[in-house]
Length: 103
Image: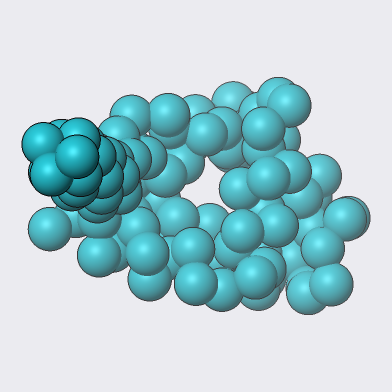
């Protein structure tokens, strides 16, 4: 149930903002902190949570760490959510079939 860890990580609006900021290109903590309503140390803590949830990758570059989105980190969450959609579509299809037979 890794998707539960992803839900927990994404429950915080600051972490969602950080993840969205990484959509365009990899960034350093300083780059990310410049556009967030929290301090640089707080951004670092949020990045640790995102990394633990396997949503971001970290690549050391000299004395900096470059963060980027780890797209496969969302795969299990996507599969979990799609299972609800599949069940809904199946139920909808069954209801249409039932109504067509009753005519």
